[in-house]
Amino acid sequence: MHNTCPPTPCRYTGDIPEEFNGGQYVRNGGNPSMNHEYGRDVHWFDGDGMLSGVFFRKVKGKAVQPEFVNNYVLTDILLASRANPKLRVPILPSVTTLINPSSSIFKIAYAICRAILLVLWSYVNGSKWSIKKISVANTGIIYHSGRALATCESGPPMRVTLPELDTVGWFNGLRAEGEPEDSISPSLTGFGGPGFTGFLKKWTTGHPKVDPISRELIVYHSTFAQPFVHYSVVPDLRAQEASLEQSEPLFNLPVPGVKSAKMMHDFGVSRQHTIIIDLPLSLDPLNLAYNKPVIEYDFYGRTRFGIFPRRKPDQVRWFETEPCCILHTVNSWDDRITDKGATVNLLACRMTSAAIVFNTGNIRPPPNLRNIEEECRLYYFQFGLSQAENIISHQWALSVISFEFPHVPQHLAMSATQYVYGCSTSKGTFSTALGGATKIDCLAKLDVKALISKGLRSPPRSVTGSVDSRSIQEILTSNDPDDPIKIFQTPSGWYLQECCFVPRTNGVSEDDGWLLTFVFDESQLDEDGFAPVGSKSELWMIDAKTMRMVTRIYLPQRVPYGLHGWWFSEDDVCNQRAVETCRSG
Image (cartoon, rainbow, N blue to C red; front, side, top):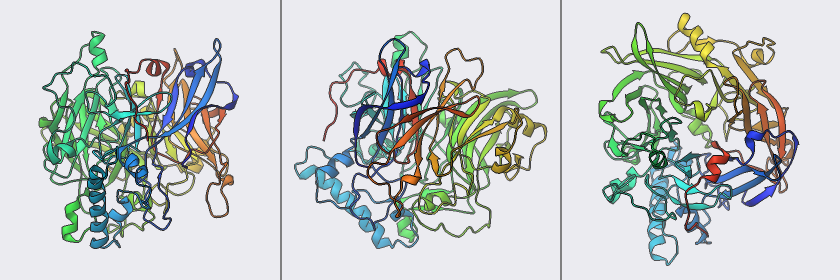
């Protein structure tokens, strides 16, 4: 999908609640702007960032008109590619090239050297845009301190405007390119610093966390150089202006204890603590020296959770468990239990291997040396901080159904919520879909408060056990109004994406609100499985309390399957920071 669309009115059926007026839902995802060589390596994590959104424009009185808009994030990579029309293959090597066991060391070295040479060439060929950052900004989008920020872990966040989704510039933790100059202390450098190591420290997680109470932005920076992980906390300067108590910013603090370069995609943050996840999944160019793929999963390694007070990464404590792969966390919160003292709790999507990383590049994953069934389930972890030993008190699944692309309402994040939401599938698992993304036909709503309470009363087997052992088909046929798991299933052939919660004003219960998700009817695909010109997607509103669809918004074009989104309220849209210039090209 190369077509971009300015804000365009959409027709709809059903009612649009007042809570949507003036707000905007935006979702990010990789969408290659160059797609000339169909036989080339390609991975779901590749592709230039494309933002797709629906803005609920206020018209007369309480009336609202939904408008669809989509735009590429104009990164250095994208602009340099457009400036060189002779390029037939993307500048950056595909993740597939880096992880494929059949890729020779010469193929990988060629792809990396080609990318380096093209980056250098961008400085000398007279192009307006030299490649200073290699991020494609294709993972997520968040809001912090008057800025909408598109994210990807190979660079800093990129600011965009709402509702147009125009690109402003890279955000360094203090200000974004394209913003007016301000009186920021010259002693603050923001993310990264000078030289190559400073360049690496600008690489910021694709899943930053925003504390809804303190309004701090919490991020980590995973790099190839020791100490491998750095950490930053960015206060909301507007909160300071509003006389809310704020701490000083922290930039680029080392997190001790990580022994090698790793693939880190997400982490956990509670009100008081941060959780870094050290997986047995390497991401290290030096692997080439040992004739290994750049990205490699160790079936006999250990998964480690590094927990430390939010502003003191030097006090990290490491908790170990069986090898697994966690690409997405759901929520984290602090607790104090009478007989255990202080605890930190984590909900995360746990996979038994890294098969999904390979399958989404159309590569057969390496043999499962431990012969463990491929699973992707919502797990509960409890870490006791009062005892001397670093022991995980509880670790088990809440349900055996597949669960990924999780969502917790943003205004409730970092607290013990009753409900979380996520994607599931009536067939297969997220780890076994060869050749692309799993076809997501279900949204799951889990009463995690009830399921965790049940698990604590009668703990399942550690690591391998589950509180609820029903299949998704059994849950779909349940008529129990108090069932702790409720499923919304699409009609046959329709597939959805990650959801986002919009709360009802003055709601009486935590689930009083709506879920938004982009949906596509694959009956529009041609006989070769491609979406022809004229294919169209929809945005569905689902009542989060009843898990029933209430509104359909018909979009003027297709929205490619993508990654992560955010709901921007009317206040967010109206209170953006000033912009002097936007990128173009």
